[in-house]
Amino acid sequence: MEVQTMKITKIDYAATGAFSQTITDYLCRGEQLRPFYNHFPTLEAFEAQLKEKSFSEAQRQTLHQALQEQYTSISEVNTKVQQNIDLLQQSNTFTITTGHQLNIFTGPLYFIYKIVTAINTCKQLQEKYPDYNFVPVYWMATEDHDFAEINHFNLFGKKYTWESEQKGAVGRFSTEDMEQLLTELPEAYPIFEEAYRNSKNLADATRAITHELFGAYGLVSIDGDHAGLKKALLPVIEKELTEQLSNKLVEEASAQLEELGYKSQVYSREINLFYLTDGLRERIVQEEDKYKVLNTDLSFTLEEIQQEAQEHPERFSPNVILRPLFEELILPNLAYIGGGAEVAYWFQLKKLFAAYKVAFPLLMLRNSALYISRSNANRMHKLDLQPQDLFQDYQELKKQLSAQIHEEDIDLTAQREAVAAAFAEVEKLAKEIDPTLEKAVGAEEQKAHNALQMLEKKISKARDNKHEQTFKQLENLKDKLFPGGTLQERKDNLLTYKTNNPDFIPALIEAFDPLEFKFTILEEE
Image (tube, rainbow, N blue to C red; front, side, top):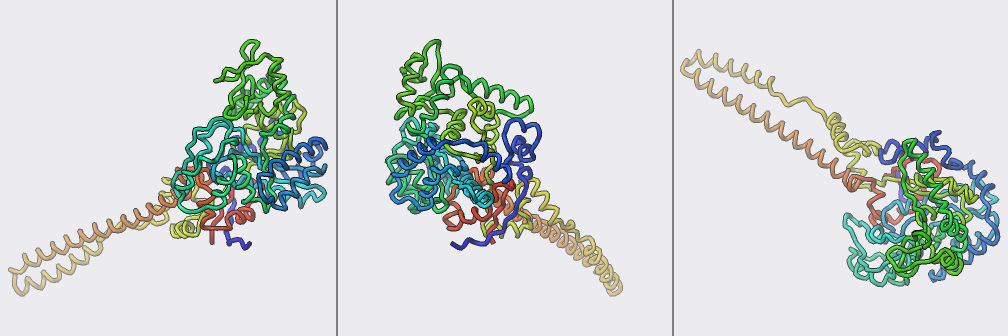
């Protein structure tokens, strides 16, 4: 496929003003953060990570079997995807993982950027370490229960929402009641409509969508809501119930980070587990000698809940604190790719990984981008702006433009003086011929001066209107590229760009360098 010609500009993340001090310090390899991660992600650092990550043949077989079962929901699995699933059985195959909620229609653009970052990381690693295989993985957050976060998306400035009364883990939600939403769409989007209409639940539909969009790149999507995979979590469940180990370790790390001036991104519970069944995902809490499931009548003794875990590990769901550990227990993973807040919260987890003797993955900030369409690029150039200028706030940009288009004040003093001189000559001539004409000449001179004064005001107003049009163009450009005053990737949806540019994803694949850690600006030429 021919990729549309793009102009690529890279700038520092700090220059965007859109990323936290934690992230900018991390990217600069600040010494304060050094105790909270393992290796900083460079191509060379993966060599050490490959040696540290242990993953047995039995673990590989469990993973392979689970993926084979999950991909039965896809009628025709892409050859590259199947090859990667099969490669996971081999001892020299490792994964690069990103994760995200099951936002309908893929949600904000950064979901796409995460996956492209994972794909490109695998490509670079394959070139650097040809004796190994590298598989990009999308971890589907199927057990998440915050439906309000995933039930909508923005398309061409309009919000579309999936209304549903279903409860529990969103991956198990039936997609049957999405029909109303699908009929509201401005045009047909076959990839999405077929996935939602032909899948039994949101997890299967999301797998179908990511397979259609990224199957050619070998992306493997995994659902942790699986009894076979959950068995790996049993030792963690035991310690959660009896020692509440994760809470102690995460609180220690969080306190240390806060002492250094870094805000905690996530907060730990005494027990970082949910109880999960169809239509239900509620926290497990200990009250004296009982383990209760909040907002239900379910209650267990220690022995009963331990037995429940042994017989039904799939009923225990890790929260945000334990989910990263669960991922690393069931995947031969080397690096986790996340947004700024995600990477920051992993810093709270290193002690937890050490306690379970699980290799802490390299933490990679996903690629971020500003995509400038040809029409917006034309507007930008007409305003004589560079892409990096656009990250300034509107008032600063307005000052910059004012300086660029600065003109001297409209002043017709010289013209008034010339008119006065001309009338003086006329007055002299009139006096010589007929002194009574002096008043008539004076009256006409006054009219001429009044006319010049009025013209001076009109010209000034016309210039100001011209500048206001320029400022309005700037305001409109900022609104287009930074919707709601935030980064485009946090609001806009894939379809906003893919509809007009079918090569949108290939353009990202071409432009993103995952280990450069620079913000990417893509400008259509």
